[in-house]
Length: 340
Image 1 (spheres, rainbow, N blue to C red):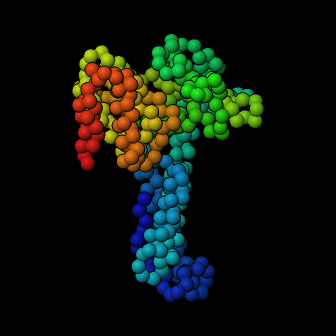
Image 2: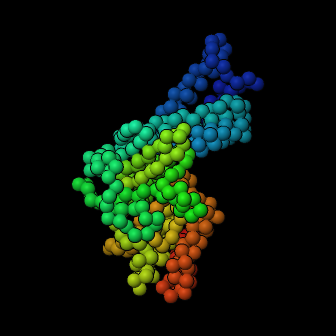
Image 3: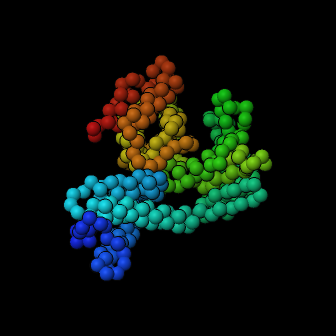
């Protein structure tokens, strides 16, 4: 987002900032009106450009950017600094509001919201009829090995889908499918996947998210996420079959692009990265994005943690280092950092 730097100095002459009104302030008010009208027009174009890049309006745009715009104006030279600060902050707020409106309309066109009793479902409109039985509670399908045993594959008229029932693990395993909180994890992951695909990132297509609230104060819930089945085999299956360690440098470059686009995967491992082959070389799809973040590109520390998770995953699955050598992991990491 850029702010106009040509706010007329004439509108800021003297110790007092221009006021709307008649008399001597009339010309100042006219300049303010012109500047505001120009900002409204330019903000429309900047918001559309940001939306096309896959950005959305979050706390950064609504809070941090207005403060930065205001601060830049105050730090500028010459008369009328306070006026430029106000305009800079206002421009950022208008940009965020227009971007938020574009995103809201896009979501309404893409997704339908269904409510039934204590249940809420978000469904991509083209999939609504194809997954009607799932929305009615039929979660049966072919079980997919791995994870916590709550993932199945089911055929539909639009193609196969993967149904993931949220289950707790670790020390909280005794709670089974019960989660707590006002923001349900299936809904968060659904919107994240949808936004990530708008940025053309290699993640599964979200089909539906279903949340059933508990009776006690509505803070407990059970959830299901439905996704179109992504092509490819888990990277570990490819490596354990005895081949294609040469895909690891390509994975490093793919992960770098993922981070540059603002997606941070909290649990990268060799089982939740799918790999396919085409004429251009290996392609990767990142799955199991519960808890992932989509926003600004992560910092160096977060990037290093992601690479360390892949290394730990390789050593956990291949303790002896016979299938994935240390030098292979080194090539992956060098490919990730090669532009630095």
